Length: 343
Ligand SMILES: [Zn+2]
Image 1 (cartoon, rainbow, N blue to C red):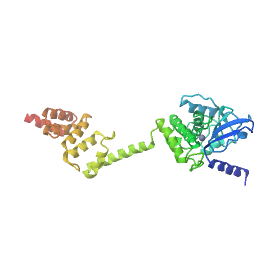
Image 2: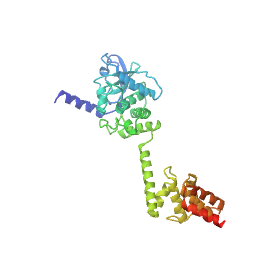
Image 3: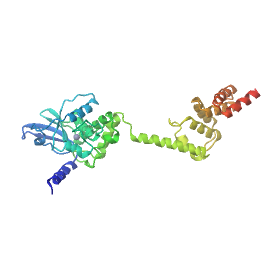
Image 4: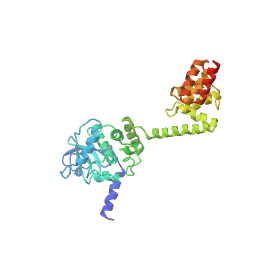
């Protein structure tokens, strides 16, 4: 086996326990007090923390983290460093100084498009942003100080923060959850980390809290529009049995236009697939007429002329007929002629 392969396998094994908070007090190693949360579920190894000055600062990562903090109006008060070889991303405090330590290679494994070590930060690189935001969430929630509470709960808090911030940065829900949906992340829960579904839910919770509108809502709108359109098609095919339930269902929808209001009113007036109800008919004609719908105006005039659903009122009838006639409605024009002649 090539060394590279065995390295990959050991990395993979380490990551299967993905995402937990780890406390490591290591007074025996370098006399350092290290407390931290790793994204990769491994124990924080102080020897691998780049604390021996072999780390390099990464301006781009700092900029990305500043962008994350900007969303909640805070300034960076922790040290950000790239630490090649740790194969992790973590929020730790080392002797009371908060650090965010990351390994570009680790971030890259989630998303091959990731590339903030050269060139500009790509905010479209939501994977890196969400992982870093998760670690920032640990610091801001003070998880790296006391580490009280159950670890899964802390992870969910950090996930919620990540979802919140990513929404503010313009990520869709899918983008905010992309890292968590990576095959690298385990489906199952453990003593240290919640199941993937719970973590996805936490990200979603934060994302919605930030004002994100769910995809399902968009899907709903599409479906409502489709059902109204279908109802209208049935209506014009005189298939009232099928048209009525669809149109009735969406009668209060903002996508229920004035023509459809007239159609619904007409079914009430004629008793098509519903008990005849002139009051309901007038109600829907009037709604449409008030939006300058020519059919609504003509039919409302007719209801006034004949005293259907309203008290007979020829002045009102003429008033609505005139409005419709001005829009070229023949039915209203004829009605006006007839009324004038019989006046
Ligand atoms: Zn964490």
